Length: 183
Image (cartoon, rainbow, N blue to C red):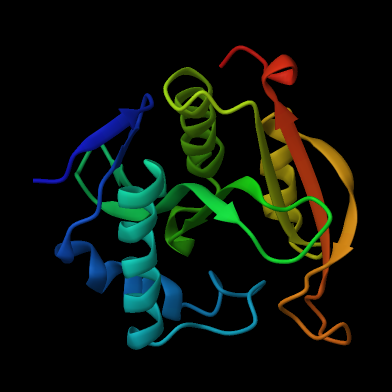
């Protein structure tokens, strides 16, 4: 049975199980979900993501958590922390990220899950600062960052994308312990 790390009013944020691989594959194959990523992910790429998440949890004590609705036990996506360590002037940094099934959008789940993550990050993991970033066209994710009380730090060209790629230009947000609002 998966371990529940923490919860919010409507959601459980928990460890992963092999039963999550199918729904994770479906989510990452959805063109709407992956609109602001270079491409959708095939099963081998999703398995690599899954294994990276499991490894990061074991090595660092945090990761991207499976998000499950309390009301029906349904897997709806992932939210959590990842060590951003690509070559940039703000890395290495602890990143908060989210990705939800498209049919769950518009219900406030991303913000709710991310708030619970930040609370867990501050109180249990003792993080001092967390960043988040997305391509400048992804206004939905940028709005979540703003709702969390994160402040824009600037823009950067993502080093893993060719500078001419339509998604290369990113916005960077940050929050630190002194800037956190009561959740």
